[in-house]
Length: 81
Image 1 (cartoon, rainbow, N blue to C red):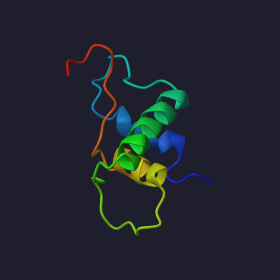
Image 2: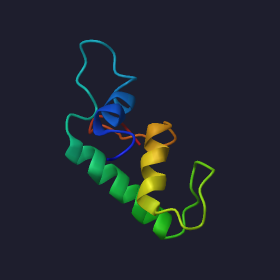
Image 3: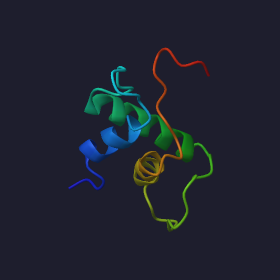
Image 4: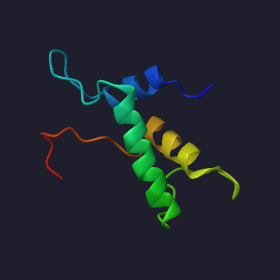
């Protein structure tokens, strides 16, 4: 079982959305795409933004932890970079 769950990740990602506004993420697919993209960045040499991981920790696990700890965020199409 994945920890944190998809529902927990959706809650964290959408936590800054004001009531009545469209959520940033509506599906599990968006979570999968975002964490996979971050995992590829870590594989390519980016430093993890969370600590406490051993050298044998998988990049995807690190990316999920970063998203859950709000160290990275998913931008909606309307957000400026």
